[in-house]
Length: 501
Image (cartoon, rainbow, N blue to C red):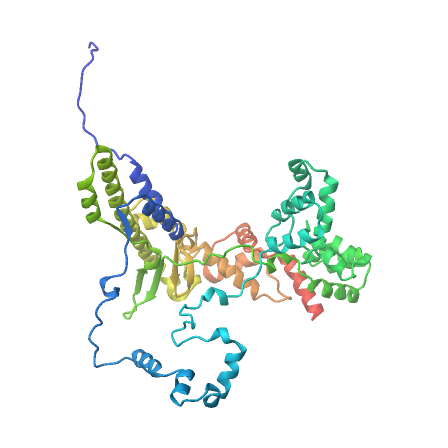
């Protein structure tokens, strides 16, 4: 058979990841804060997009006709409107306020700037700023910079101080390598150490320490309590963390009574002095989905409307501007803006529906957890949810990233409900790894000094009580993941607590 070139037509379907499709996929994994930032950027860039304002019922207009039925709230508001303030009542009697309300005049004299009307506004007509009444803590960096400017004389030392202050973590510890800082600034290591020694005397005492023993030593030195025995205790503080009191007394050369006295002094110190200051704004976790028990006993799932940005496409403005467009470039720009605006509104709606669909399936599969608690948390994977709602696993993974759900059991990240399965020895079904961790924690918290449970014993109890077939290595891994010490360490801790008590 001879080979010869020929032309063939073939028709096939394939999925092409267009830029807009890739952007829609990226929107799924954004948190509500990141999504709001993205929408704000689009609102500034696209003139056809605008935020959806309140409905027409919220706009000022003619007041509706008053119903004959009055709620308790409306009656309270009406009564408060009819109540006159002290000045109005005194003017009606043609006398001073002090004669009608003796305490009112004294209060106004003590704080004449705090007189507000019944709507919360001051005499100047401006509403008070609630932020002025919120107590705030100073920043650690600002607090230290003010002290550094007072104790350091030269600009070079102040420059070194600013770099050292920038190298502090939230607890107040110095995480900067002095050799690297000296090379960066082109300064002598001795100069940097001298500035550091001066800064270590700043308030609060203990900042600029490199280790916990150094931080505690600085505070004890300030109290004139850093004697050789106390220094030996700080040098062997690892034994204290291990609750090895016998070895600690042997290393220090003291008896139990002296050791208890020194430990009492150490407990009065602050191992993290920087935490007394603000380190920055704290962001509150806002749920994306609410789950409530309905009147019929079923779970009601609702999206949090406050986390969903609402945008509209201003087609009236598009039609008006298009008529005045003169060149093809302007028309192409407007057409591109309209296409982007339509895509954004559609993508936001599709994102909301996808989140609601995934959350509903999670609630359906984790009904036992919501009803009875963590012991009934079922093992669940992305594939189980994806197959049920006919989606891809990657889509479910993006939807559950950085999303939170508010349940009667508390606020959880959607990723929390996806746990691995641990086989059951009695054939009653697999157990969730998170439920096993919870049971291990319960067993350890309930143990007594005479009966400290080893990892092997915990594994046997889990298999005997609930049929959970788990190995000792798995119990040890879960225990270490929860920052729970070993059985030997727990026995030491309980013995020390019993001896102190």
